[in-house]
View 1: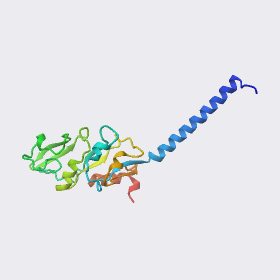
View 2: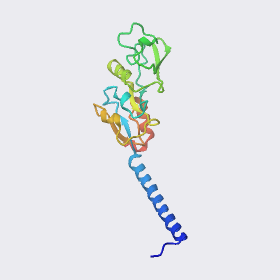
View 3: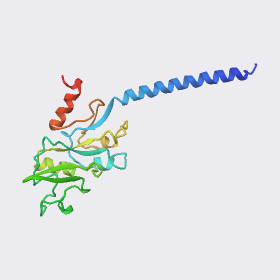
View 4: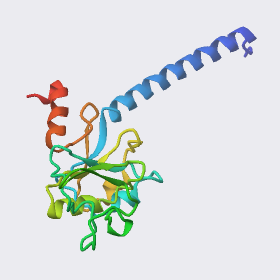
Length: 195
């Protein structure tokens, strides 16, 4: 048996490399189309604010953050999502705030109204504010997976540990389940949702 010449060896090697590269690209595209079309999201209508989102995400800082539906908010002075239950004063002192990280910023508008803004950099996704808002308020605060942070794991650790099974896969073109007018505006922007 005759050994191949250098030229034949390189030619077959380059052909094999091209074949492997083509297969790799096709595999990458098919894997992206299989999981890239769907993303994880938390349904705020099922969520029970168990605080598992804050500790079970594979990221050191959870991809789940609090979102505020401004159209639903009452802009109350006595906000149950902002103030600790039984707080002695209704001011911005840390001991009066429900959020353990101070992620909710309260700004006076006019008597008796305040605006509440979520600082997502400080939010850990614990859901304490959401639970407070839902207990005595109108539910304008809710949790959502932020897709600029989420790595879209095949099997989400938060979803596995969620006692209410509020996590589900949703189409990437409609990655958020929003409340109030914000949700309606989002639906109007996506033609496939206007059926």
